[in-house]
Amino acid sequence: MLATYFPPWAKETCVQDVNEIKLLLDARIPLLVIETFEEKKALDVLLKVANQQGRDLHRWSVTDGLARMSFGPQLVPKGSELTGAEDMLRQIKQQFQPGIYALCDLHPFLVDQPQVVRLLKDIALNHFAVPHTLVLLSHQLRLPAELTRYSASYRLTLPSDDKIMDIVREEAKDWSDRHAGARVKTDNLTLRKLVNNLQGLSISDVRRLVRGAIWNDGALTEEDLPRINKAKFALLDMEGVISFEQQTENFANVGGLANLKRWLVTRREAFNSEDSKLDRPKGILLLGVQGGGKSLAAKAVAGLWGLPLMRMDVGSLYNKYHGETERNLREALKLADAMSPCVLWLDEIEKGMAQDGNDGGVSQRLLGTLLTWMAERTTRVFIVATSNDISRLPPELIRKGRLDEIFFVDLPDESVRRDIFTIHLNKRQCDPRGFDLAQLATSTQGFSGSEIEQAIVAALYSAASEAKPLDTTILLREIVSTSPLSIVMAEQINQLRRWAADRTIPA
Image 1 (spheres, one colour):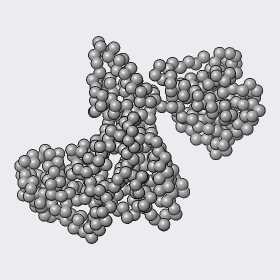
Image 2 (cartoon, one colour):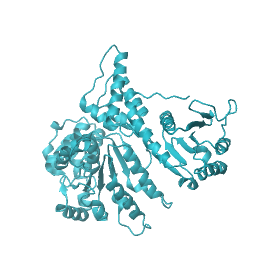
Image 3 (cartoon, helix red, strand yellow):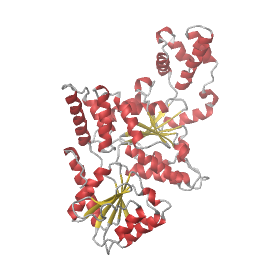
């Protein structure tokens, strides 16, 4: 008999899986697809279901063949194991005693092997005469179209916050026992963030990541969180139109945006807490001038809330093949749900959701998919959408209820420009006290934050070529030679600022 050990903290999850799979089998589903990396856990659940229903459970793999998991006579005599998928299915088809068959990693045999597909269909069609249940276990499996109407899919439940915390405590105790009773160093805030960030992973993956973090230095600190988030992203295989942003800025590195900072601070607890009685924040739209700091602010939201940041390049969703664009968006949103809780940054959203009648209706279908997800999602995914041209966005996307607020990121005023100079000089090991910040701030009227940064970069090159230390004079020379976007595109920017004046909140 193949047995699987489950620690006490896994029993509740296992009971829920048993009950839900039993309901599916009671509904007489011939084919059940379970996509999971936790094969042993799935087999243990199936064995419990089989015992409750009084049915035999058999397991098949290409290495071990077909064998009964519970005590009793084997379906196939020892020494004649059926390792071939076609032979195995023919053997099952001939059985008149109803059973549950866990078929591990059958997915390679579903491609270019019509006999295997047909045998699965034969068994499914004969289900009401001989109610066999075939459970297809794999990390990923897509049934051929002719089998989907006879099938159902199930995903094993994931550990709750309490279960994740139990795993953390167990791993910390194990480390402590092996290090003469020394305690793992951490704090309650870090633990809460860690538990949040480990949601969406299986029990075994949670244990592996927690163990790696603890055994690295005997501590769980803020520095461990980005590494854990990156590892989680890799485990969920998210590369594609959605990317993981490892460097999330601290709001100390963002000049201005006082209203946005205050708005986020007052809502941080409501988003991060499972028990808050307040409505959970949904998201914001950052509208503004190019280079004004929208992207930096999006990164800073994740940094302030201690959450992983997922960036979706909306323009990269598009694919020339029919239906692939919408599928790309659905997959990206599914992955964002899996990373929950997280911040989802929809970069330059107007590139994919603009009202355009020349794309065969693709943008409208994309919009419909996104709006449905926004309305129905239950996961903690906070949207930060950035846009340079709100006039191209459909009103149903930006109305109240879809997003919480629209913030306008304007060109920085004189005091904010002074802060920006201080931030970027400090980043380049230049003491701001050695510069005339007031004169620099005055001379950069109409400059965006990125234009100020590039003026400093150019001035550093000039200073290096002249073998001089950077000073105010060299900076002013570079500033004078720069034509900011507010001058080059004055008409468009002034129009945007006039539109935003009465319709948005200044960030």
